[in-house]
Structure formats: structure tokens, C-alpha cells
Amino acid sequence: MKEIAKNIYWVGKVDDRKVPFHRLILEKGTSYNAYLIKDEKNALIDTVDLLFGREFVENLAEVLPLDTLSYVVINHTEPDHSGALGALIRKAPNAQVVCTAKAVPELMAMYKIEASRFLVVTTGDELSLGETTLSFHETPFLHTEETMVTYHKETQVLFTCDIFSTHVADEGVLKISELPDAETMLEDFKVYYKLIMDPHRRYILPMIDVVKNLPLTMIATSHGYVLDQDLEKYIGFYEESAHEGKNNVKALILFNSMSGNTKKMARILEGELTAQGIQVESVNTEKADKDEVLRKIQEADGVLFGSSTRYADLSGNLETILKELKELEVEGKVAAAFGSYGWSGEAAEVIQDYLLAAGMKALRSSDVIKSTGMDNVTFPLRVKFNPEDSLPMIKAASAVFADAIRY
Ligand SMILES: Cc1cc2nc3c(=O)[nH]c(=O)nc-3n(C[C@H](O)[C@H](O)[C@H](O)COP(=O)(O)O)c2cc1C
Image (tube, rainbow, N blue to C red; front, side):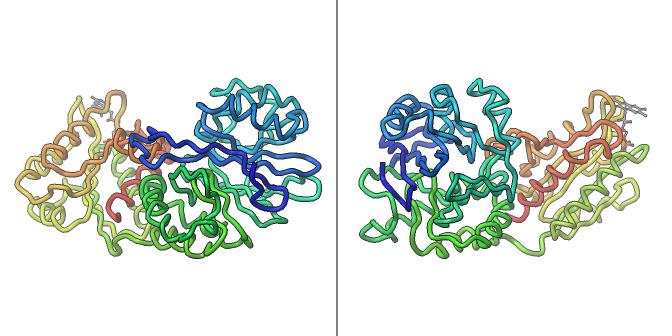
């Protein structure tokens, strides 16, 4: 147990194995940093990986009678941080699990915890521990949807879980100020950002706004080093990285529609992409010159192809355009298929086949899940009948499409 600030103790686990994680092997290992805050009410911030859950609970019991633990704050539900919760909560009968609303069903399902044990918090909520106070700020998708950060007001320590972390197992050093040369960890810090945070970069700037509004002495991460000096440098790296990307990108939306539903989808997509600062042109191919459309495809940074389904096929003339794609230089160009349908929705799937056959970078649900872990994004984007009934789905897809052409 190491004190990192007044009455705040590191109680984590250093894991110096070559750790399998997110389809990678962490060659330098990692650590699972959990923190105990001692006050009139004792609070634990995060736990450790499931593998070390029992050991963690035994170690904690040696430094704190577990019936005096009032709160277990879970900033992020992934089991490398929440893994000891199941074992802990049964041995700490007076502890409440503090987390966001989105985290509750996940933790209930993973650790069989009763609903009555949870204290749900949202951005701006405060929790008094006696002498000192915690506040909470949701930071969705950094790196999963239910994530939040926790701030200890009196010491000005921010507990960020995955955010600002580094995958390194260093038994001897916890704070970067203790390193002979803090620059040596910068490359690992950047690699971590690239692997874990960059796929969610649209969520970074709102998080930076939160962080910049809090006076900070220390960022207590949940992997690798605690940042206790040059905080602007590390925060600045995230901010600059999130700003990178192509400006002035152009999207083209091509569509066919019998009764207006796919046309409405095209309009919604256009509105969403425009709101993201992307230049958008929509074209109903029934009314357009084919060569002109092919020229526009070449010029666009990304193209959305939409058709409704009519008797298990495309409803209009879009296929005459799709057949030409192979002759164009579109390899690697971002594309997506969309369309309204009634019951089977073949059209968008047929479009997808053409996009892939032409070598376009056609967005697919499976790729989105593998790169971001987001399961609310669907490609090809198919909606039943009126797209107004599927707005969240269309909005989520627009955001992923915008990022795909910009970065
Ligand atoms: C003649 C006709 C055939 C259709 N065939 C199919 C079909 O095979 N599979 C399906 O999922 N929907 C089918 N639908 C439903 C349409 O795809 C659905 O109404 C869709 O919302 C129409 O979109 P649109 O207004 O953009 O053309 C059919 C509709 C019509 C009018």
C-alpha cells in the first residue's frame, strides 16, 4: 500500500506477464491501479483484473476491515478494473457500488450483484466521504459507453481509469516524478493512446473540457504510471491528437426511393454529416446523368449508396452505377450501403457486395465492433420503413462514417 496523496493509497496489482489484451500481447505487461481513500467513509476507486480478484480482496482486508468500506467506485466496467468486485462486494457488506446508470446492468450481469447495492451517479454529482468529497463526470466511450472519471476535490486528484494510462509493469515506480527520466515513458503513453483511445477520438475533446475545468495536482490512472508532473503535456497530447484529421472532406450520397423512405434516410444522413462539418451532396440517381454521377464518385472522399428493397432487389437504377465502380479508381475509398426496407431488406446487402467487389472500404458492423467495441452501429445501414423510427441508428452510423472519411 503506497500513499500517493494525503490519505489516498495505491492498492493495485502489477502484472508483469506478457498480457493478452484487445487482440494484442502487452509485451511490457501492465498494472491494474486501484486506490483506497481513507476518510470517515472509506472509498475504493476501481479494483483489479478478475485473475487477481481473490488476492486483491485478501490484501485489502489486511489494511482495512472490509466492513468499514462504504463505497466502491467503478469508473469503467471492463473486468481488468472491475474484476474483484464480485468477491469484494460479498465480503464488504456495507459497501455500495458507485457507477453510472449504464454500468449497472453490466455489473449486475457479470458479478450477480443485487440492484440495492448500487448508487448511480451522473456528471456533476458529489459524494461526501466526511472530510473530503468526490465528484463524478461521465466520459462516454473512453473507452466504453458507461465510463466516468472521479475527482477528489481536496487533493485535486483525478481518477481516470483507462484515460491517460500506459501499459507497463513497473514494480519499483508508480509516479512519473520517480522515474529517472519521465520522457522514457512517453512512447508507451502514445502507443496506448493510439491503440485504446484513438478509435474513440470524437469523445476526447468533451473529456478534455471536463479535465481542463478541474484544478489538478495528479492524474491517477488505472494502468501504468500515475501522472504527477507536466500534466498539461499529457492532456495536450490527447487534445492535439483528437484535433488531427482531414479538413474540407466531401461526402456524396446516392439514392433511389419508391415512396420516399430511403430519400428521407438520405436527408437525415446529409443533415448529420453536415452538422459534423462535412461538405455533402445528395443525388437521386433516377434524375441524374450517369457520367456526371461517376465523376462525383471519383471526387468524393466517401460515398453512401442507398436503395430501398423491391421484390428482393434494388428498387431503382442505382445498379447501373454500381456496375461501373470496378472501372473507376475507387479502391480504398470509404463507402457505405443504406436503404429502407419492409421485411427482408436485400437491397443494401446487394449494394455492399458491389462496394466490396470494387475494393472500396465499405463499412461493416463487424469492423466497427472490432475497432471500437461499439455494438450500436450497423453497416450496411438498413431501417424498416420510416427512418424517423430509427433515428439513433442513423445518427450513430453517420458519426462513424464521418470519422472514417476524416481520419
Ligand atoms: C412493390 C414492392 C415490393 C417490395 N418488396 C420488398 C421486399 O422484397 N423486401 C422488403 O424487405 N421490402 C419490400 N418492400 C417494402 C419497401 O422496401 C419499403 O416499403 C421501403 O420502406 C420503401 O422505401 P422507399 O420509399 O425508399 O422506396 C416492397 C415494397 C413494394 C412497394
